[in-house]
Length: 108
Image 1 (tube, rainbow, N blue to C red):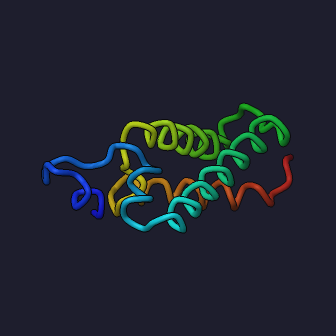
Image 2 (cartoon, one colour):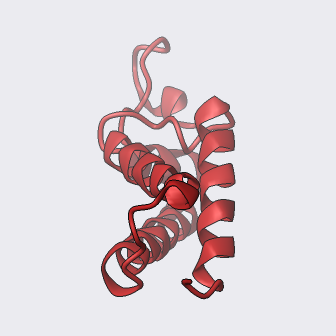
């Protein structure tokens, strides 16, 4: 919550995930968040367009995980929900676990 020390009003917070990570952890934290964003944006694009997952009932978890990761990253532009320990972070971690596990499986 280092962003609250930088703002004059103590009730406000940084609403961008990159600004929040920079205020809380410095340049190293911002670089780590950028690596995380690029890694999972690439993984979502890889699973969607390169691996071409078929739209069948058994793939509902992977599709919902890709959608949730995309939603949370886009939401990170205006909120810092994934950057702090919250329910959003727990959902994000479970979704990336599903995507990482599915990445190594062969399509049938």
